[in-house]
Amino acid sequence: AQTIIEKSAEEWVMAIKEFTLCHEGDDVRITKMDPHYIYEGYRIDEPWVIIVGVTMDHAELDKVPASLEKPESPVEVARQYNRAARVCRELTNFILSQGYFAKPWAGPFASALSMVPAAIDAGMGTLGKHGSLIHGEFGSSFRLSAVTTDMPLIADQMRDIGSEDFCNNCQICVKACPPGAIFSEKQMVRGVNKWFVDFDKFTPKQQTGHYSKVLI
Image (cartoon, rainbow, N blue to C red; front, side):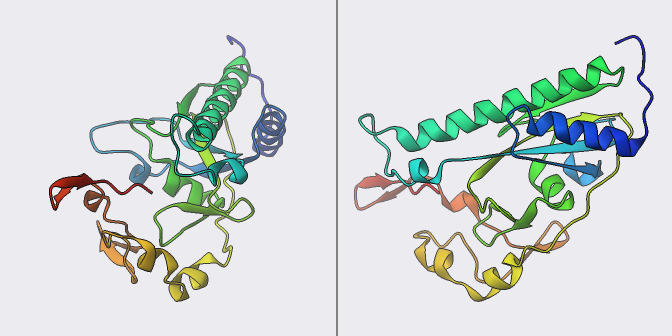
């Protein structure tokens, strides 16, 4: 829009969250842009990241292993990625209509923007030992999308959902991982001590004359 609508940052935060929750979003949180969210070789100039979360039907996800006859689990994943994409694009259009710049980032492959650290800083949850983000209310059964914008906003706070202590003491995913890609202790990764999954181990390997592939 040619005309910028003037409101306080507090009012815009309320408007953004109300709009998102009324347009298929299940959670929406805000954080300041951090250079660590941007993959090397890319550039994002907007100072704010709006993170959107959409829940998944865990009963559908439990219908594994998937097959051509029983495709429910991957269909549910695709369905919710689609919904997350719709939400972030609707929110982007709303912000643009108010006279501010906005860009949608529809996961999971959002090129320049890494959403998980932004979601953690915005207070959606914490990183689990299994390498996935654990939401305070949704667990790991949710998907992300995002919008970056120059609209004046206020950041949400990080929150402790209690999963850190749980992951420290629980070894279920470590023991259940066939290639040993999940570690029982945190690892130093690019200067940060964090839970780390060695995804390079999840590749086809020739074993006794056939190929075995493990997916998580």
